Length: 376
Ligand SMILES: Cc1cc2nc3c(=O)[nH]c(=O)nc-3n(C[C@H](O)[C@H](O)[C@H](O)COP(=O)(O)OP(=O)(O)OC[C@H]3O[C@@H](n4cnc5c(N)ncnc54)[C@H](O)[C@@H]3O)c2cc1C
Image (cartoon, rainbow, N blue to C red; front, top):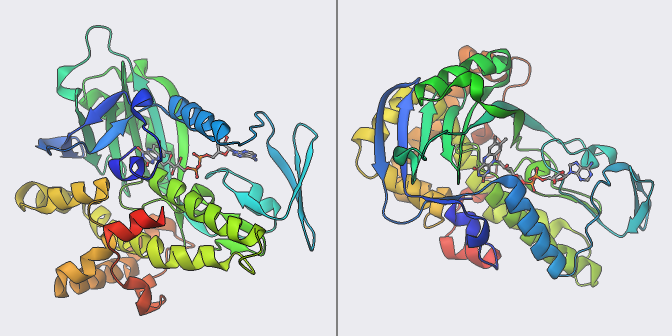
């Protein structure tokens, strides 16, 4: 959980934080590594099963009823209400429904909503050191550019083990295992001994994908709100959940006529962030070697990245701060999106559209960090 997402929560995550990260070791295709440090904490390492259980406990304390092992199987939409039927044979009725079931969720689809996303695929597993924990990874994570084309490889140190993974464009899915093995060996761990291998998809929202459909609302990965550049989605899941809660409250209390306020608020606050992140994604993953070189040799780039991860700075501030340089970044990203090579690599049949020409200019206005915090 990066510092930015932790700041959104009204309680401390220390009970489930296994490590505090203050540095990153960068490499490209397992060569030329270097490490950059920052004084303030950057991100907290936890394990999803621990974090999710902890969040569920806090929700129950706040009055939520949790039904485990009750997957949504059927959604019936009526004029005045929605009925949801679960695998456990129960039926629930409500005026609104929130699809919060992640990248593999089916709720939106069952409600007849056409969610438009493109996917990055990943594979990860755990290396469990037999002796003491390797000191080089005490408070540093590792990122390897182009471990798979289209994304990166990583090593994330947890309490007593290290999580190693790779992700990239879908067409590279068949080679993920071989690439994970290679990365694992590079970091000094026996690839064959990796435990708990799991495959994943990471959803990237297309610009015209719905966030609300009548009285059904989509949040987090179900809405594809992942940060394309970093692959982090916990911040957007918490943020969109908080915004959704406010607008649902107003709707149910009769203070709002519909749920469109949710869309308007995301359009103002979060979506401009994701759009700029998506521009940077095009640019940086087209040539990871150049990106890593810039990180290494241009002072000030790493601190900017750290500020974004911590929430002290937003992507949306970039157009104003960088001025004409940002226009150059946009033009380069547009050009990259139009190259046959990129279209071929991302997804031959359905490449992401050049958003620059599709979105209203107003959506790009800068947003201050404090406004984001106020929105939470
Ligand atoms: C390998 C990997 C590493 C990542 N690392 C990071 C990271 O370090 N930092 C970060 O910020 N993000 C990270 N992400 C992204 C992050 O995991 C997601 O963006 C985030 O979890 C989205 O939260 P969510 O609540 O929308 O969905 P989820 O966390 O996926 O939660 C969805 C929930 O819905 C439940 N569900 C699914 N289907 C149904 C159904 N039919 N009925 C009822 N319930 C259902 C699921 O069981 C689950 O509990 C990573 C993703 C991957 C794949």
